[in-house]
Length: 283
Ligand code: NDP
Image (tube, rainbow, N blue to C red; front, side, top):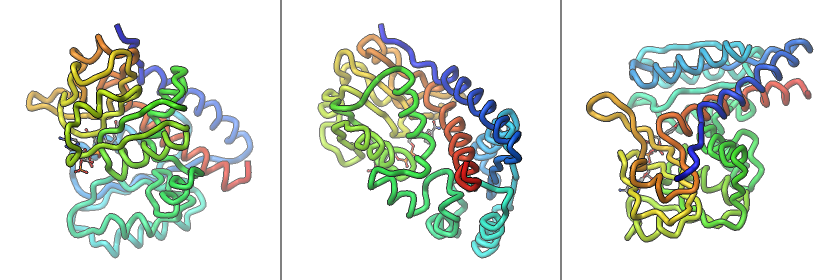
């Protein structure tokens, strides 16, 4: 029987600690602020953005919401980013991805002041992460590191297998784990015999986007299993990339999905915003 890592509880604790920290900052005249930019009508993006806004409110962080129509031009979006870069009330800027076709994501990320890039996707921040000195660790992999820390799981010297190499999850995850002295293998859609590689993991991080793809017989007895996957099934329910029912009996620790990594992402976004406000004010 695995220990279930309760991401909801750990995220709630992190958010409560941040709320108290923000109270202290406000007492010193500093109100952390996060600008969230959403373009178009993607329903999932709208849900995420609303969750972020509510989480800001609960933590005492000012939130500035900018909803732009799906046919907005890249130039208009860049103008907004420029304005937010210059707005002293804004310590963090988040542009909800994906962006509609026709807008170059990289161009938008590069336009952002890297000191306000609380998602950690600006090339300067990617570079800092690569040299092991991240300013703002990308929120989802940062959330995974926090889950491991709270559970007392030290990746140092462990073989960690990350399945997925996206810029927002897989790659930054691998870099954070490397910085934490893990031996890291990164797998992707061209990895032959994925089951064999997964079977070598002391710690497995699944960030694929394929419902219940990783099954129990792939997983080493006693492995720590972190499921980043959040997949919506035809019946509307959510599930992870890990087949919880067959993997849980073999794992030592496992995150459910939903209720594991997901809630941590927002908590880490708030953490990066507060960190950015502190840096700006030298606190
Ligand atoms: P992407 O689609 O950007 O990347 C998926 C990765 O998985 C790619 O590297 C791809 O390989 C790899 N992959 C796809 N199919 C296979 C396969 N059959 N075998 C091995 N590797 C495969 O997804 P994201 O990284 O954005 O997201 C991954 C999952 O995490 C999704 O379920 C997403 O919803 C979830 N997620 C959850 C978050 C949260 O909890 N807060 C935040 C972000 C994402 P290749 O590069 O070769 O194409």
